[in-house]
Length: 344
Ligand code: TXA
Ligand code: MG
Image 1 (cartoon, rainbow, N blue to C red):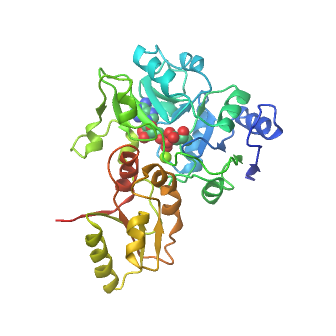
Image 2 (cartoon, rainbow, N blue to C red):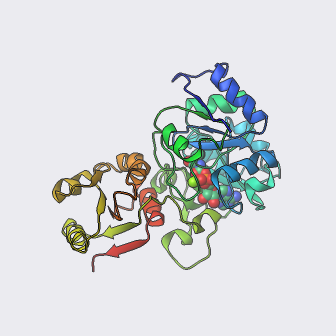
């Protein structure tokens, strides 16, 4: 398959040729990658089972992992769900368009391979001009997981999508680098108290401005319960070389690095600007300041993609504070890692 690459203007209109071409392919049940404010998504008609099947095929994704449906208006949500609870409406008004995905009761319009047979459906309105123009032009709700090969770090640039999926999908809309850098927060609105199933761009602290109470799914805090969000049980975001996550002071990190180097490992480091400056090591990718977790989130997937297994045997990565968007960063790093070393 030849993958078309479009580069629309930064202020795209529905009538732009590139948007129209992409929308037509979506209506013909093809899959097209497009930018959102979080990461690039791989879109297909959410109401069409064979179109959605192509997403799973292109990504090599297990089909028991449900997808997020993207819409351009709250009106479109009504077509997909049995009802919109008050609390969900409040959240949409406050945070949409934006990186918040709401789990609501499905009315069966989203195809069964979107919901993986669940009675619920995940929906969000992306805060990106290109994504919104595409959704309006296609006049379809679009199922869209991150546009990476399953298991790889999510794409934050069109180039990442090309590396993973060229030849496997109909097209890529290039909107430049994404902003937030980690995926949307997934919030279950079907439980009595809304529950965060995946931390993301909208933080728990943000949600607490609107909601009297927010739970964190026990599966996220490492307790031994089965995952509610099926996506939680697969290896995710993995770089080419194994990643070890180091939890401790800078001195502890430095000692770990030296010990492993002495054992002969070629080590790549991912660290905050602050730690990176102290290390004097050849392979260090700084991913932003500890004081600026927004920047760390924005850089995270790109640095995870950067180290190649031909150069590096092992990646040592610093851990970050677990609040604000740092909760999303730590969630992804924990999943990306094969080992966590904690300072005693
Ligand atoms: O930022 C994002 O959310 C990106 C962009 C492209 O919009 N999309 C994304 O989609 O991350 P995906 O498919 O990679 O992640 C979907 C997450 C998974 O953790 C999945 O298990 C969960 O949402 N999910 C989807 N439907 C669900 C449902 N009905 N119940 C519980 N979890 C659900
Ligand atoms: Mg993903």
